[in-house]
Image (tube, rainbow, N blue to C red; front, side):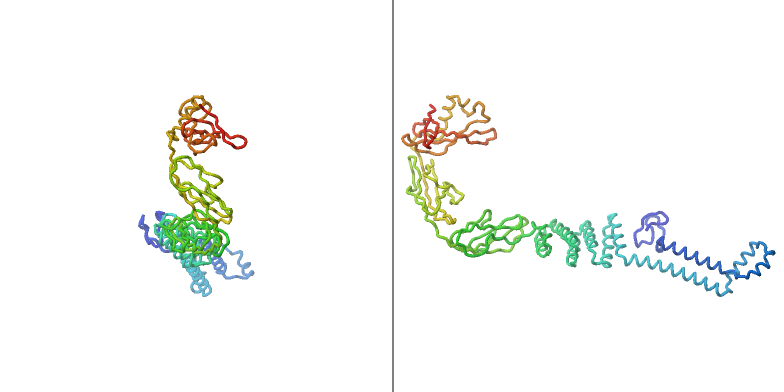
Amino acid sequence: MKCPDCGCEILEGNLYCEKCGMEIRMVPDFEPEIENSITETLSTVAEEIEGSSLPEKNESQNREHAPAKKEESKEKKVKKQKENFSWDEPGKNRLLVSLITFTAVLVTAAFVSVQMYHKYSASYQLEQAREYAGVQNYEKAVEYLEKAKELKADSADIFLLESSYLYRMGQKQKAASVLMELLEKGHLEYEEKEKAYENLIAIYDEEKRYEEINTLLEACDEEGIVNQFQKYMAKEPEFGYPSGSYDEVITLKLGANATGTIYYTLDGSEPDERSMIYKAPIFLESGSYQVTAVFENEYGIRSEIARNWYIINLMEPDPPKLSLSSGDYRVPTMIEVSVPQMGTVYYTSDGTNPSVYSMKYTGPIPMPLGKSNFKFVTISDEGVSSEVVSRSFDLALETDITVEKAINNVVHALYNRKVLTDLQGHSIGVMGKYVFDFDSIVEIPNLGYYYVLNEYVEDNNGNRARTERLYVVEVYTGAPNRLVYDENGQMGLISLQ
């Protein structure tokens, strides 16, 4: 409502203009259609009164007095009108009273209709709420929305709008309560339900109420909405195999519904952050297992514990056999393994337990310089592993030719042959430089023991690419050579001196 004097906007309920102080009369504004209707009605009634105010005369009387008819004076006309509306004529009085009564009833009905529309129309309350929200008076807007909810409690739009206004007022808890009230009512369209969950989860996320988000989604019956907010949930880990007895090795995979960590145990104990972390499939070999797992998502929400039982019935293969014992060695020695008939031997040289992803034994292995810890295992075709066999060696050659000297001898020899342009390994036409790295010690039949060196090209960023050339240096004399193979795979030497 605007002040009729100054035009300033007046808030509903005020009796005075805050700007000019003018008193406001509480008379409702008439709709244009209502006002036009009243005007037409009054005009029609007035015409009927005027038309019936003069008594009819027969035509003979009119003709008789026609020649003597003169224009009446103004005073006579006024007198006639007064006579026509004289209170002495009952018919005319009743018509006038009816007109006044009809007008009063019409005005009252219009007033009541406007008031009833304002009071009982949800559309009006919603319109008023939006107007107040437009000037950021969210408190008043919420008041109108509360009235609208009473009139049309099943409208999701009203709840969503009220929640947004409360959120803008900083009343996040009330905003969340309104959304929960909407969800509890049920019978919502999918889009309405999706919007309610989206707004509610956004509020909970800001307040880090992740447990409540997880609980909220667990109770949701819309799969599409649950999948949309999957990252907030922590469901039980899923097992790649059902519980049961198997006659083969199981490569057990564990799956989670979102990003996070799976903790597990194999003995049935309850897993926690100190338990094993699932990073790759679990190999279940011969024996019984009770696999217990729990998932924790990136928000720290933990799932229920999942359990499965497995019995693996397989024959364990024989372990590898080594004639070489652990100990100290002073001359290059080859490590030889006897491979069982059923299975393949895999090994490591850094002390870790071997698996099918480790080095496969295909022939004698040169013993490395210094200390080493070899482990060997036989793995059957069914994936069953044997007992692990370990050997520790310490090879120290009784020679003055070290690995560093052997590499230095190769560099000097290539420089003297003008293969290299300097002792740093640079060469014409090569981007970067040549570098050499120790590989192993081998025994060349009838020639002796040699250090084997690999050749690489190293760029300015330190990246290396291996070439096809191999160099060997005699372990006692330090003589550098190129190592080559003939068509039969036999080793041969090309001296660099």
